[in-house]
Image (cartoon, rainbow over all chains, first blue to last red; front, top):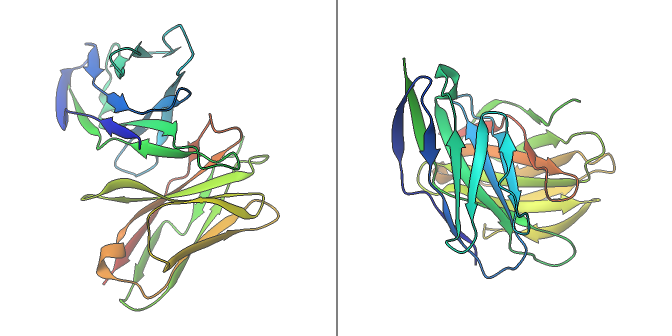
Length: 118
Length: 111
């Protein structure tokens, strides 16, 4: 079974500062993928960044980077130069749980609510 | 490219009724997954369809069902609604299981 743990229910960060959102995972799969999504109050899940389990380099997408430490089973999201528009829920998710016939499912953590202070 | 479209955005139903939600995936994506999001349980996987076939199913009662059409559009149906079915229902389309793109969701309220 897959499990994602996000231990920070809420976080505050000053505008223009960097912030790290924690994510640890548990899986027995050798091949898996890790995702971070942003969910504003409107409800839409916005894809931020992806890291494959075999990727040697940490993923980066603009102001987002993923600090992937495979041995520790952690996949922390780093947001640099926070903006007011970054205030939202952030979810860490893992693709795994292969069910056969090419099908996977995403397992999500409980999320971290980030508030950016002007 | 056009994103994932879910309709309707909001829905209010009465206990015992049934409801149908729709999801149109990104053009070319043949996989559509559905998730239920509630404050108590978080995001939970409902099922996944690929080329009109259900490939995977989460741990939900049989009142939750779905289907996929030849144009990859998918519908999910919930029969005999219960108060606990109130949730945000999200669908995601995927090409190869790497690029899951979600829609804006349908917020269902059961009264």
